[in-house]
Length: 87
Length: 177
Image 1 (tube, rainbow over the protein chains, first blue to last red):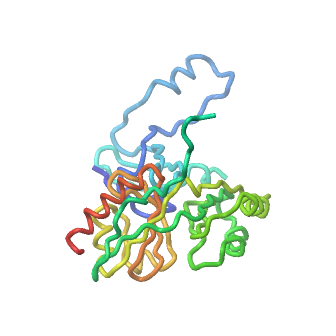
Image 2 (spheres, each protein chain N blue to C red):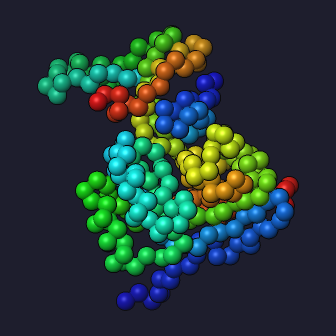
């Protein structure tokens, strides 16, 4: 298991400090079709390999992070602050 | 009018401090704790906070990007607290956590080994220098750690968890005491 998660603010921390939210997806426009919203809310690819996920450092700095993780090997390629990276 | 008067009792009023050569654990006075919420990367604010604290060493502690705790052993009056909140504006907001968070001091040569039983943070002096602070979990309880001396850490925790965390720390200290 990927037990040490590199937080860009706190350094390496155990996964118990984090909450996983799931895949990083682009939010559809407010007036997108119901099908587009259905996809966004419910349907997931479950890929094998490289995967962008939202993680919340719940018991640490309380920031939302984007973690790039390999679902097969659990290797973590990158981690960044979800909000600060967008600016 | 309620039949009972609400009285403020210290969260760790009934515990016995641990005093020994290798490890010591003691509750700190429930003075003031102010949570400061600003913008991540605001260096000017970070510099200004020191002048707003009571001036004691390590009174301002980082708590994640754009957030700090200002702590002290003396209780603040409502007027003092309001003045502090006003002084923080417009860069940041202050939230009075004086009754929300409880501080305790762990010290002694074995303090790193004692805390390492409960948290995965690297507590070595090179990685966690004097004055550094961070939030982590000790066991299952989220706690804010600050190194206040080479062999002393202050641990700040939500009030409701204070007694439980104290019991855990006492248990973790037992072999060194």
